[in-house]
Length: 113
Image (cartoon, rainbow, N blue to C red; front, side, top):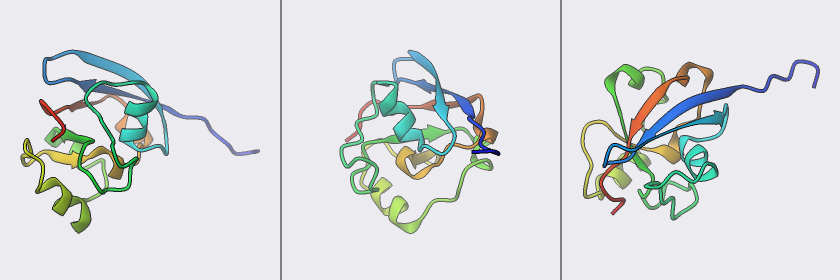
């Protein structure tokens, strides 16, 4: 544990009604795990992070897209089934939190169906 660092990253989850929840998320967790751990409403995460349900979709502004990993074909196919998808859609279970994401603002869809 000599070189171990504990990094908390501030992420703001914005519900479709505009309610904001700014929380600290441990680096290395997924954005979905950060939401579930902090009881953020609007992230259902029915499959527990297995990229099998699309109930953890978030919208990521263009300014943050370059700071996250690219979307896999599996994730893209799951998003295709989501009622509220758009060009900014990502599954939060597929994005690992990094120090570069500090201050990120994510918008949540009206529902996770």
